[in-house]
Image (cartoon, rainbow, N blue to C red; front, side):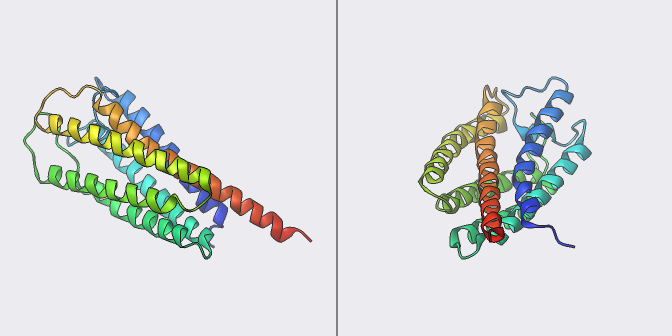
Length: 214
């Protein structure tokens, strides 16, 4: 039995909500953790209090993103941009499973191979972000295009700020606002994913209504 298009598209909203809820829950459980100055990756470094929870949430998020990608593909029809977006989402979800094998070291520890892998995956994620936002911008009308452009600018600006903070983190220096910058960057993208899902769900509902009309 295969899932219908609507449940698959709903996975786009659920994936973003799950990630945000997991971020808040893990941060509150981590003694001394600062949402403002510490990165999300610092919730699951080697030796963290709840690595299994972090891994489980990561796999669940990736699975939901892959499911959403298939939902986008099923909704694409003749739309080239949506077909590309759906394919990128599936590829991104699969590639993101690599985070399971690339936990970062805790602050102050010597850089290891997993840290190098972590940096590589971070760069990969940014490439996917911009590719998805760029192709997705033309999926709907002018309002969604403007919203996508605003999201691209947000991700770009706060991505630069996050990179600068990451350099200080690698040097074991103070990183005020690094966690905030990274969260603005990531949640701007995740909000865009949720908005895309809602737009496709509405379009799917309108198509079903037209099909059912006598």
